Amino acid sequence: MDNGTTIDPSCLQKPPLAIDIILKLDIFGIVLYSVLTFMATVSMLVFMEECVYIYRKVPNNKKSVIIWVNGAAPVIGTMSCVGMWIPRATMFTDMTSACYFAVVVFKFLILMVEEVGGDEAFLKRAGRYKLKISTGPCCCCCLCLPHVEITRRTLFLLKLGSFQFAVLKIVFTILSIVLWTNGTFDLSDLDITGTAIWINPFVGILTIIALWPVAIMFMHLRVTLRTLKIIPKYAMYQLVLILSQLQTAIINILALKGPSPALHPSPPCPEDT
Image: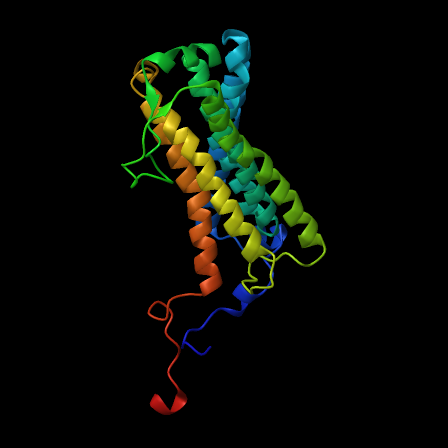
């Protein structure tokens, strides 16, 4: 290569088949894959048990949102496990995880509203409180932004800001799969004429817009919901976001850019040895 790096030829080929992965596993690989698969299986079983408990014990207005939010880690972990065993399905497992998390973003906002008593109870706070909109990830540096009155329109806009991501993420995922079947969507194609270079940044913008209303609602209700341990829940929600979305994006970028020359120096020329 021009930059002096060397890449294993297998890295430039299509991902291996599942049977090839199984046949080439050594002792360490077998143990590692078994442990990760066991962990993913246990997390899904625990989630299913939680769903049964929630269905029986939790009020109707909170059942679906709690199930959706609690299922973020098990579903994403299971999809990662499937992608680990079937590398050629990684694009689809990543898309499935991203679509599920897009819904979780909206459901987490709804969960906070329901924990204070629903829309009507939230609107009754209008006389005493205002919304601070100078929060991340959009306006954390804009401290001069005024506080906003709590109205039905404000609550609708907050919900719409997160709901658009849940809908549009699924729409763009379906569009990406359709374009992939036509041979026009390739994650490694970074040309200006490629579809991935346009779809992925736009989805990233939608993600930031969707996270903003959740951050606004959390900053507004974090004291009220302290007894429900909303701060640890929000921290875990952010952790799932980082591990499932940001980590995948970083790995994909590094894979597209190639390995570092310092880590993979080119072999010496025959005349130098």
